[in-house]
Image (cartoon, rainbow, N blue to C red; front, side):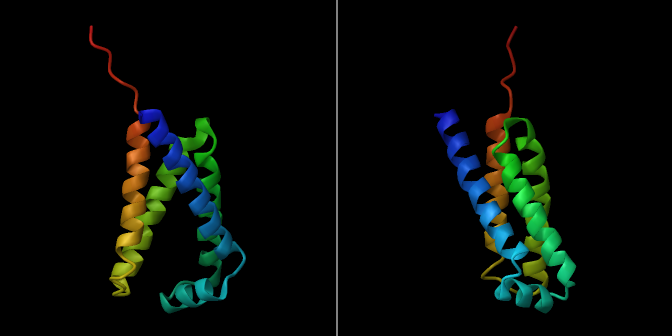
Amino acid sequence: MKKIIKTALWVVLGAMFIMAGGTKLLGSHSQVEHFAQWGYPLWFLYLTGLIEVGGGICLFIPRTQYYGIVILSITMIGAALTHLRAHEMNAFPVPLVLLGLLVTLAWTMRHPVRKT
């Protein structure tokens, strides 16, 4: 069961972050507007997109999953703080839920401690 949950989480999260980051890398009009409203420069939109796509790809590679989880978790903390600072309470829970799912994925990766 743990393996099924882990597989479902990395596939869903990986695909979702690749798609979300892809819209940023493509310069989606709505993304450009959001970043401008938040006071971020345009280059930060592309950097965020690159981080999301790269982190999403890392989730598909067993040796890099941990690094993807870490970088995407940090990114989701930044996203939550951005929504909070902008008083976007409707959007605020989304990065927190994604952060929770990333932490759950990290939890499924831990190695059991042997009892001797």
